[in-house]
Image (cartoon, rainbow, N blue to C red):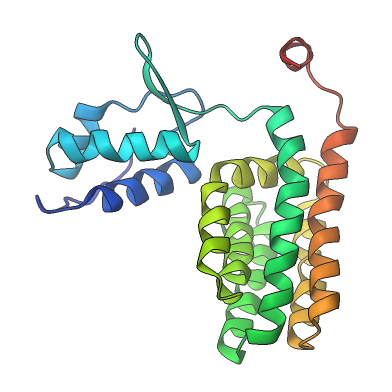
Length: 226
């Protein structure tokens, strides 16, 4: 994996390693199906293998990786079925988050959302899909965070791998510009402090993307798996 890795102190906790690995997976530094070698990660981070092993166990519980006796630990491959099962859950969760955020959100957070939308538009204009995906994910996470519900945020974070894959697949169904502009109505509902409308537009935002995915015929491999 050719990424720059910070040298972490020996006292680093497994939580720090876990967050580092989640970030690497979500950003695509580790690809689906790629092995994560415990000793290599430990060497890159300047730590012992113990906390790396514990972090990988946590990631398996969160669904980011799978482990087997002969293949070691690999990044989970997200299937079409996974994504179809995800989107109604994500629509419900983020709908609840948007409703709560509409009541609690402050001007600084609204400004951050505007800036993330500007990043999406700029990335779309330059056809930089990775940057647009990153801004998209950050936009949605910020709204969940603004809801002020720690459990809600934990559940959302546990779905990051699936959410990132979902967004990537959705980006193949519409132009980058269209996908960026879909977020404007969400900001407007939050700025109006309208909980019901915020929930409605957020749910529809995700459900519509799920409908795009449903309309895409599965590949032969996916048909066999399903």
